[in-house]
Length: 424
Image 1 (tube, rainbow, N blue to C red):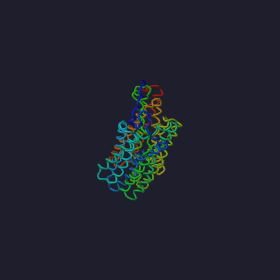
Image 2: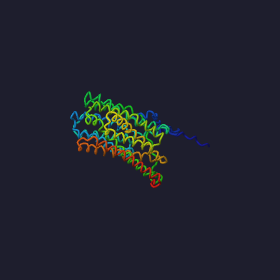
Image 3: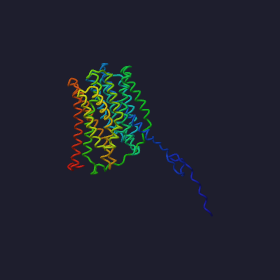
Image 4: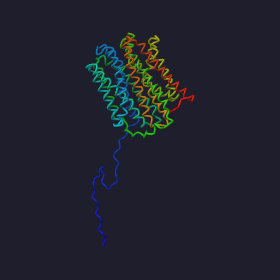
């Protein structure tokens, strides 16, 4: 007697939604944004977090003092609050990215910067204003650490230099916008100016919202520290140089417009015009420094950058009048964002054979920049107040910091060339 035919098993719907027994179907894949779309989002992030959240305060400083929102001494410390927040953001971004997708953090930080603009439209008291300026700094530090490293791995290697320059060009665009838009908004009033900046930040957040690539799990890095060929001393020297470079930028970043407006007695309009020149330099700076690095290498390009900046920071002290101020504004403006791709490229150059160490080294470099910049902002504000408003002293400190950065690079490079400096 033949065996009975086996009854077919009942069909059930599995967890993934397909019928059991049928070939599994892959879940729909998220379509990655194009390279130009991601680069645009990165530019929007740097424009909001650094270009507007930090640099729009410089042309606003004289107006805040003139409107009696805060005294001159308090207003200077409020400018430094953003730099303190930048340090906090740079320190917190890495740990936060281990628990949340980088794109989520970036979007949140862009929104935080926009909210801070609206909050600053009502100066309830010093603590309120300080807290929101600090919050805007947090957004800038986090965006600096996370935005470019999130985007660049999805860009073809042959196009990463151009993409990096375009991302950091957002800083210059923000400076240019703050130098042209802020004076126009101030004609409507100080409150309206802060609200206008908040609206602009929200628009840019919306433009950049969908351009972030999906987060890719980082490569294993547990053996990186044991690799003996990692040039630790050169990296540590680079971190110090980058921080000293930050000190050299502070006099122009915080005090340039106030120096022209009140120190030279030329008025707010003249101060804003020099800030526009600063912004023009900042727009083209990353592209020019990237081109220089392609031709000369990142190491020589950095040494030239330190020298040019040092000379430019000294120029206001030489009594050259408008020509000296124009050249100084353009050069320092160009290197304010232009130094960033140079240092980022130098990190990659030193760690060419250790790509897993790139992100950690860049985070350390950004933290060094933030620490010394925040310290210089508070220190120079204190020096300015207690020296009776001595602007010349501020520029002298900035030039000395850049000269020290160049000296450190030359000494470490000479020791390495002579074979007297170990690499690990």
